[in-house]
Length: 165
Length: 405
Image (cartoon, rainbow over all chains, first blue to last red):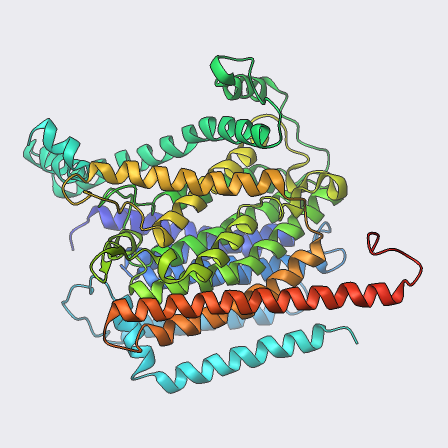
């Protein structure tokens, strides 16, 4: 395989993502973990972008960085003592989680290496957004509607819970 | 290609430069890389230097609107005032407060400025003259404002200052809330024009309704444009929605502890963000670079675009200079109880109206009429509920005059 400029960018982005992922687990301050997590999300978005999946990359930034990371940061800030205090790195479950982690990694690596991934020699469609929109309101209209109802229910439910009585 | 061709159509310069590099014997990817790096540097340079002018403009216009003189000492009309301020900020001591979280403290201003530079990439200043005509342009614009709220929150937390943290919370609450009407009013425009790419949005609005009315989105959906403008005031952190820097309540927002150049970055983000929001408004609702004779002379597009954007910016400054600040609960109530339901109605109107007859011009008239009716109904409902509120308070406080309640 030829080593192209794209590989260099991919390696840099992947390295950045892995570094951020490592930062999430090794940093002692929870807020720093959250910041590393934002970096990891951004790295994944950049990988999507490299794969020319612009929509997925933007959705990643909007949902994971714009919403979920903000939520995590708020959760950390509102939990007493976690903001400033230095969290302990390990607890009594360290051994078990190490085993589970290694097994999960082995399983994923095995799947990744063993499965024949179907590869299609075809360029990505130039502007896939209209196609996606059409698919949402034709082929996938029922899942789309179900998700819409679910989200509305969640929104109304959250308001009902937060309401003062 | 000669120089006149460039002046007529400046968007030719990118492909021409690419061909030049290729003919010099470069490989495809090297030429692409050089072109992209130059494009990035141009946008970054334009964004960072435009702030110098914008700050002067804002101070001067706000002063004139409030019957003051404004900056008038440094240079003609005080034009060099900002340069003097920059020198002052550069020479100030760079203070990091005790107990601050150094990494986040230094990272926050960088994130804020990163947001404006990223957004600047999708502004089409003339036909095809754009950093990146992304197919997900408007979604990208909304995603980037999430980065700014993270930056503000980070600044508020890292300063180790309670006022700063409160300011950070307010920024996130405000930006996340007003993002909903912002996104929905953009969605209305996207449904009508059928594209999210910013350059295509501007191009689509070049169509003539009934053969002579410009098909600008503000004419098709005036109410959606008004909602976007209000949400823009909140996104741009401008009065009446500048709760996060409310000096009388929380001193100055998440940037209290910053000094010198780091403070300047927050300042820069504020002013350039306003210009970019005005540019997005122009692109989505005012037809972007569209105007008479723009087909023959694409260069005119730049003039039209900046005239329109600066007029929108003037409107933003006008509101900021004249309106008092809202209370935080009023601001949130207005967003969740007025803007959010109303934008849903507008999206519904546009979604139905866009398909109601096969003729786009007739559809545009229907949508426009429905928008105006929705605006009048909304104003009626708000007026009634406010009047009822006043009457209830009057009944609760019998001894006082109406002037006090």
